[in-house]
Length: 455
Ligand code: GAP
Image (cartoon, rainbow, N blue to C red; front, side, top):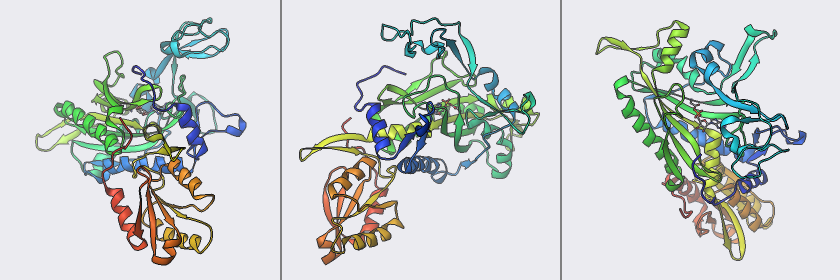
């Protein structure tokens, strides 16, 4: 994590909004919660679905050199030997003899022993710590009814290995030649020691990973290409460019498989932190799996008349972290007519609901008319019908879930079939004929969008 700057919003405010508006809840809350796991409510699901849909759009719909994959969470245990995870996917841990808690030896400044916390900020607890030992972050389980060493399996700690072990299958069916990519989105599991910061680091999370297979002599060029592409993805979806940085890993930080990695970092409330890693993995993974499985994992270049092991460029992002960055970047408050308004200024494509249809009052045929307008719109874009409570309260609710447009059915609607269209960001209200609404909103949704928040 880089140096922290004064946050525009605190994580507590984000957590409170997410709970209040049904985005994200602490998991197993009625039982007192379980550390660092979260459940996504209605709007959280819709937001995450939009994040994933935008990623698939960038990987699949907008290009023809990448194919999709959905591999299993449980894989052969040898996969994790070959990948280096069994031996190397560890954190150094120390135990506190006083409070019996475990801390990461390399993150002691963040550690808090409840009995003997440090009196100096930035220093570890003043308790009785053991020497560091390596702790593997993979969750172990058993496959089948017998719990013995032969039945041990692991919940995947990354989706990437599922791609490498399918390299041969995909190459045969997709008939692609390097450069080409295989993309997947799925759950990964890590028994993280230092969790926290809400959904930033959890033990169960979703990844969006793409392995891009390239001729060895083109690896550096494609690495640079994917750094630019991925940075652009975030800014096209409205993240303010000055809240993002690209940080190159130093030699001591590089994973065992990587010859170069750069992280895209976002300025979260706790400071600049990793959103996505873009690594040049060389030929490490294909060579390892070829050696451990005995299968040839290479590409035969007909033109050159020779086989080679492609090198791999990997953009690896987290769905939950991306969702958090979108919420943090969108969170805004302002005073309107003497009242505080909280609003999520999300890119319309990311917003869970695109349009809310609201009858001004619950009488004079307005609810029925509004329902009719809603039925027409919902077929074209994610819409919500909202009739409970005062109009002010309903606008505030829609502002807090980031709905970019509100359509109000009022007295004039009953006379001339026009509605009020309210813009979430400018609060501008315009009169639109009901018959034009669908086309207008669809075209607005396709328009480029930049955040109106100051940078
Ligand atoms: N295959 C490479 C790989 O897994 P990583 O940097 O460990 O690389 C990629 O993970 C991305 O997955 C991270 O940038 C982050 O967005 C997300 N991620 C990793 N660990 C996470 C955790 N414990 N909680 C939430 N997201 C996580």
